[in-house]
Image (cartoon, rainbow, N blue to C red):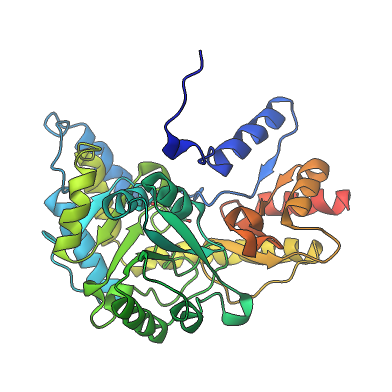
Length: 386
Ligand SMILES: Cc1ncc(COP(=O)(O)O)c(C=O)c1O
C-alpha cells in the first residue's frame, strides 16, 4: 500500500549516519569487521559517582512517575551552577534554563517554535546537518553561510550584512565548530550580538564541544546584552560521556524558554528522575574530570594526526573538539572518494566532509571516540592497503 508522507518530509532523507551505520552493520555481518571512525559518540563511561546516583535513585520506589515538564529543580540548579562556574554566566534556574532530551531535540523544538514557510534561516556551511533538517521540517528556508579556512571558519558578518536579510529570522552558530574544530573569540561574539540586534535575528548557539581539548569554555551568553538576542544549547553527551542518556539544555531569556516550552511540552512528558539527578551529579564534578578526559583525547589525537599524515591530508593542530578535520590531497576528487576507497580497501570508515555541506567537500573528519589501539589498527590497515 502506498501512503504518501507529508510534504514536510518529502525532501527529508534518513539521517546520513543512520544509513551509513546500517551499511557498516551489513559489512560487519559478512565478517569484514569495519573500524568506524565516523561518529562522535564517546566510548568512555561517565564518572562512577554518576552511575551510582542513577542506580540508587532507580532502585527507590518513588522515582518512577511522570516528571515536571521543566525538569527537576535539582537539575536546573546544577545547570545554573555549571554555567556560572565554567562560563561565568548567571542564569535563573527557574526561568532561564530548560533541560532537554539531548540538544538535537532542542534544535527541532527551536525551529518548530519560531519558524514557518516564508522565513529564512542562516545555517553554517559546513555545519551539523541537523540544523538544515530541522529548518526543512519547520517549512522555512535554509540560507547557508559559507565558512572558510582563510577566515578561521568564522562567518564573514560584513558580507552577510550586505545581503538582503529582511526574511532572516534565525541564525544557527556553533563554536567550538563541528566539523572544523574552530573556536570563536569573545570579540567575535560581541560583533555577532551587535549584528543580530541590528537585523532582528534570533541567534541560536549550539555549544556541545566546549570542554573537549579546549582550555577556555566560552558561552555566547557571557556577551554583554546577549540574552536579548541569543539562546544557547548545551549537552552532557560529549563532555560527560553521556551521549546515550540524552541530556541537554537550553538557556536563554525567560520569554524564550517559555516559548520553546509551548512546543516541547506537547512533545514529551519530562525525563526519568534518576537520570536527571545523575546528570546533576555529572555537572557538579570538578575540573579534574575534564582534565582526565582530555588527557585521553590528547593521546588519541596524536594517533589521528599520524593517520591523517599517512593519507597525506593537511590539518591544523590547534583545532578543538571531538574530531580532527583535514583537507584531502588533490589526487582524490573529493572526501567521499577518499572515504569510499578507505572503506573498501582498509575497512575503515572515515566521515566525508561533504555531508556537512558543499564547503566541506574536500575534507574528511575523524572522531576521537576510539582507543589508541583501534587507531593503531586503522593505521596498519590503511598502510597495508595503500
Ligand atoms: C554540533 C552538534 N550539535 C548537537 C549535537 C547533538 O548532541 P546531543 O547528543 O546533545 O543531542 C551534536 C552531536 O553530534 C553535534 O555535533
